[in-house]
Image 1 (tube, rainbow, N blue to C red):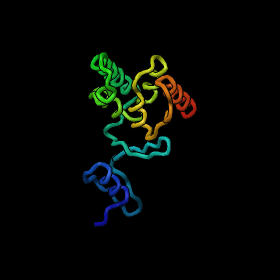
Image 2: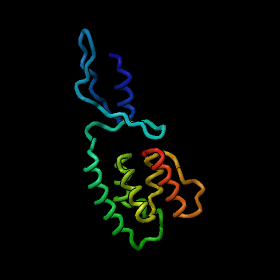
Image 3: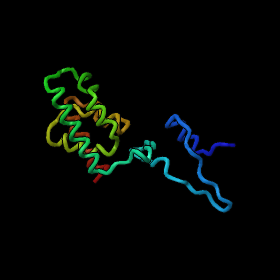
Length: 148
């Protein structure tokens, strides 16, 4: 049996076999959504439907991870150690839904969010910035322009 394009892409993305759509004589029905397509700044990716979260859930997860990250790296000066912290990595894992919370955090206090922003967005908006403050301003301006 030939695999549908949707199933091949899902297999390539998730690395596992996913169910084919249920076939009827007159139409094709999806039994359940496999993934939600997300388009962000020219990058398309698929998030498994089982991982969909409300913004309120993402906010709680973000705030918990942010607090944990802050405590764990408060006295750390090595940026690589800061961004490799498991709590910081969980924030990156929240994906584009974390953007408003990261940007709000940048508005309140400039911090090392640029690695996470690059990872989520797929490009460096603040490339060439000479200071953390300038990088924060560029990301905030970009966010305000893209998400008015």
